[in-house]
Image (tube, rainbow over all chains, first blue to last red; front, top):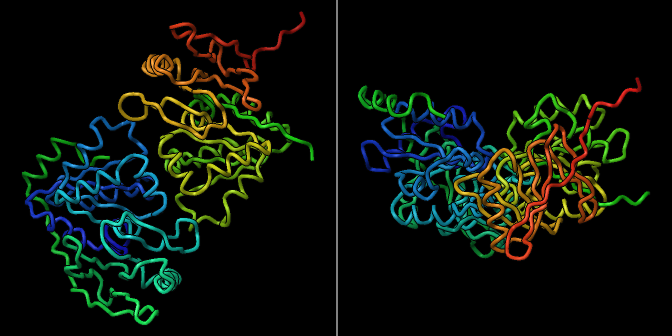
Length: 249
Length: 244
């Protein structure tokens, strides 16, 4: 996601819904990783507010609060249907994942069919690289490289980031790839882009390629998706309340 | 400018993070700078730059006759003080590192070049201090028990010793530290909650305590067994004997 989703206003519930649908299960397990922002409690509360009443089993892994985590991290990650990564500092995200071995665990999870999702830093991390503001001004930075190519986010809201991206593609510092506005989701199945969606009218995506040494952007018209707000069936909510209490942090 | 010696004050625990209302360790590190109104930068990386922690730092240090600031590695795009964090660190008299996950701290520091900046600051005589993760990080090797069983972690190596914190508060750490040293971890120092190890250069200068009975320990292999040696601590804020 180029931005948007439950951690940002206006929330884009259609994107959250889509992420759950991709799991292909009636009640998928979804794990939120707020590492890129340092696991702040407000993001975690927003996650529970967004997913608590949907048909899913939400959970959060805070690498900064591992002292409170009893289960092995590997079990937690590999038992999910969806892993949803929050935005923040891409440099911190990758550095902290690597020291905790999350990069390898997420690769395993992806290869086993766990849906990987995220916005901003949590979207660019899956690609070969992206444009981060982790140190202030936007700059090109490498990602995990699960997906071929690169991604630059907030393409509508942050023109400086977009300019840095195009320049980095032109210079060869970043491989060609995609631009995504806030509210836009790019769905990759295996390594290939299958679909572009948008929760916001007018939001766009683009493919950037190098043509004769210059970056050329081809617009991608995303499918506008609308939320179908619904509550989990009463018995699911009751079960969840019994199991976890509510809301959970 | 007067040459300043490298100094590190490594807390086993305590200070404003753990022992609100007992300012003795925090006052001690401010005095260690030898500056009347020291510049103090709080580095809360190990907590993920938790807002409440930063707020508590300012609440505590704003009232202690210093110039407080903090360094956030998660919100560098939104921080007013942009520019090179290394320059900011080198301009301090005291760098105060908060507790949390030492593994996350080291990962994030290395990604931002803070490890090098800390080393340079130390060489130039900026006093480095911290508790828990903010103590372990300065040593060559340390014991972390943040998740699951205690395990060994490599720190920045400014102090060529091993380190264990919360020595009286978490018995599992003590047991594991002794076992690690027995298994070949280099000898080193442990500190109770409320005690701090003050190093000048690479050598232990003194142990200070903010509460009675809190101590530092030297742990090493002698012959074929681990020997734990109690280190005398200077009790900070001990009542001054009044002449009758």
